[in-house]
Image 1 (spheres, one colour):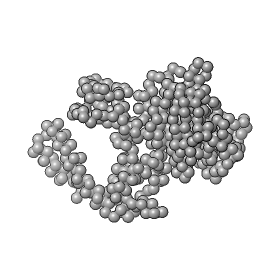
Image 2 (cartoon, helix red, strand yellow; image 1 turned 30 degrees about the horizontal axis):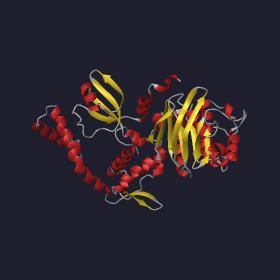
Image 3 (cartoon, one colour; image 1 turned 90 degrees about the vertical axis):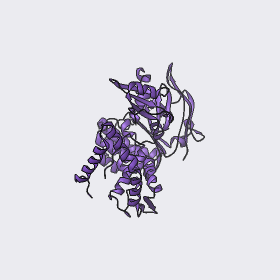
Length: 127
Length: 289
């Protein structure tokens, strides 16, 4: 488990985002236990209040749930939920900046479409 | 647990002013960072809070009890500092016993485990250890003493990177097992930024900031781009400092950004960290004191 933090966003949001990524990638499968606030804050020496705040973001999104006396677990359907959210923001997060950058570089719409085609065929996309 | 209130505290040595009309509160069960340049008065403040020296004016109180006259209150404060108040040939074991005698319920088991982790023998005398290991030994006491407010003045003095890492881990662990207030006075801002919840910044005899780290960083923005556009965008905002390379300028803003102002395409807005903020807020000031 590898965390990396920078100045881009408040720390608790980065913790939430990286845990979410781990759930999405299957590093923490549905139904499995995620590290406790205690473990995370001790290992990363981050203030427990900050870690808890990050965890609560995932609880609010219904991606993890508290089981009394046992800890935090990945909810059933968590991966699907993340998938949905990411699909919704795909246009804003990726397509818009892709088009913007292409525009800056003077890449035509036709060329851009060809490049996407090439990316598809290049084997960089697994499925 | 009770809240600690510092009201109108001043400290003067003759004509020299160290602290002037300082006011703040420390909540129970919270980790604080006390930051300031050399000579800003951090140690003086910690010494006043823990009753080692008297303020010229003002009071330190735990809820409504004054610290300077109540043994019971002082028994809740522990200060770990560079100065060794121990008699000359004091062994580490004896330091544990002294902490147990004064505060009761010293956690010997955890203390011995930690001592081992730092590679220190309990039978050795404190003064025979290197600077770094003396710090480590004092930290072992501070993390296991039974006090609700633990003040650590330069807790990493002389510690190597491995031991600093060990200390940060053990601090968080100890805090989680028994939540109490820790105040860390340190220059290693990068290392404690994630660890402390709230910071107090001392400069020019005053507390210039008293806020949660998150709140502070929420107002810390870098604005980078062509100098003229950057200047236009940050006009009227509080700018702590700026770097310029050729025509490209980065302004370090410490202010709420105006949502109404349009950010030009060539201008990028980012964030910077607590250390950079500290430097920006305290440049000039106490350097010559």
